[in-house]
Length: 82
Image (cartoon, rainbow, N blue to C red; front, side, top):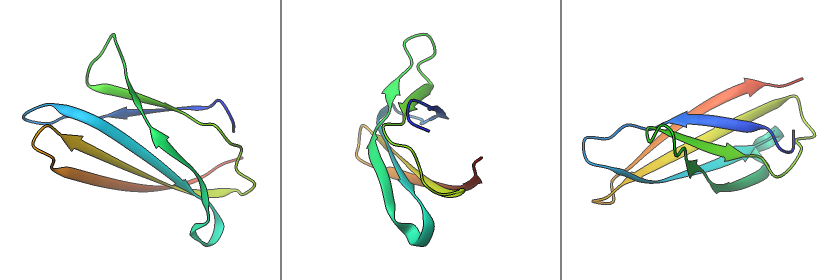
């Protein structure tokens, strides 16, 4: 739902400089994408606030984290929503 927050814990042996989020719905249709913001209280956590409501009950969330040298790690999770 619009305004929901996704908390992402991103750890690297150097420094995580950026975390991106892509949310896909049915048939991998793009719902939204954007950048997460680093949590000021816990630098390992990043927060993504959704900007759109999904008109589906199943979403795929793709998170990518980039470190200072430019290495990117991607994690995909599928979720049922009500």
